[in-house]
Amino acid sequence: MPGRHLALASNLLDSLILLCLIWLVTDVEVISLLREAIWLTIKLSAPALVVSLVVGLVISIIQTTTSIQEQTLTFVPKLMAVLMVLLIFASWMIHSMTDYTRELMRIIGKH
Image 1 (cartoon, rainbow, N blue to C red):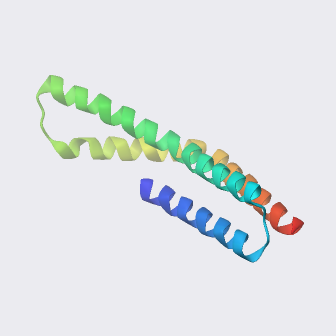
Image 2: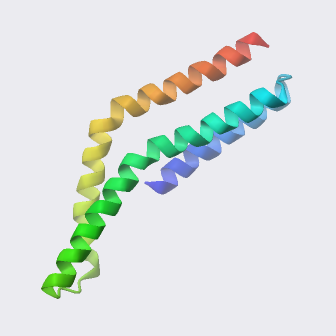
């Protein structure tokens, strides 16, 4: 999933650079939009990353206590946990992205 969020960040950055080049947007607005894009990327990726970290840690502790040394054992529980988090937080994520896009469109419409 991190690759997907990096692609989102790359697309946001590309759109902000394009916005800056096509429309005459002030430096303050560009910096503000970049800060918001980075913060949005962090907020959107945090739930999945935190759950993946916690599940991996719990499974690693279980593996250590039971002396099971199978490296692929963490894959399926992490995958299921991340999918559950994405299902739970999907509406919030979409709402956050559309709010940011509306803000971009408002700024484009202003210029």
